[in-house]
Length: 360
Image (cartoon, rainbow, N blue to C red; front, top):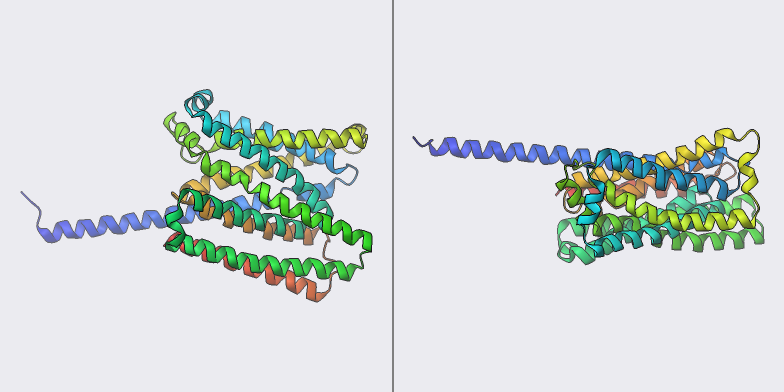
């Protein structure tokens, strides 16, 4: 006996409504995870401020070892069955892409530490992650989904990126004004210019972390086939990527440790807690990376493209917050602080625009 037409139509409408609710819930979960990821990632450099007795290379090597080797592989082996099978089943082209993007990202990560040491945490985060956010999203979109550039999602992403650039200009003005307020010398200013160049290149190379995620999707699919959950299936991509990045960081840190003869700093008294702080840096950074992978997977086909600028923008805001907490803006004028908050406000607007476009 067939159901009446109006009963079938009513059931169909209820199914569509329920599907819409599930999609809305999934979107909320995805955006929420990306926001948590931004908070964790944006906080990872803060412990460096509590290690004044160590040189940059001392703290950075501990961060790199824990955040790029120890935590990634432990988490991957705990959350993905048959990791070796995942890699052996993937094409060599995909594996090489992920590894090479990881090495290039490692160069960006190394430059990141050098950049923020010259221009400050607040401004360094803004410049580096702003470039990373825009380049890391638009390039994969143009290569993999060029048709989406003219769809509502693509237009929202491009508009949000343009708005983000305006916010970065405000933050650059804030940094320049802060320099003037603190009366930096000519030598310091030339150091700032060098730091600015370093930050720009760091942003370009750092965007390749997202290239690994987007172009290495075959590995994620293989992990799903072995029984990994959708939330954890990206972990084999991250492990391979950041291992490549570790090589770049290791080479430069060892070079500085030998050049500056700073190996002995590790055995100095009163610095035992520095090891824990370095490990905390690694945990915060990789925890944010895993959360981003989970959030991007929840956002659907374009999650790795649309979620990336949201992730990076919140990174910037949190980095500015920690820079302010550590006293980087104490001697800055009200105008410099006003420029800074204006930039933060514009970046928040960029997040909203990109999120609305993704919800459409």
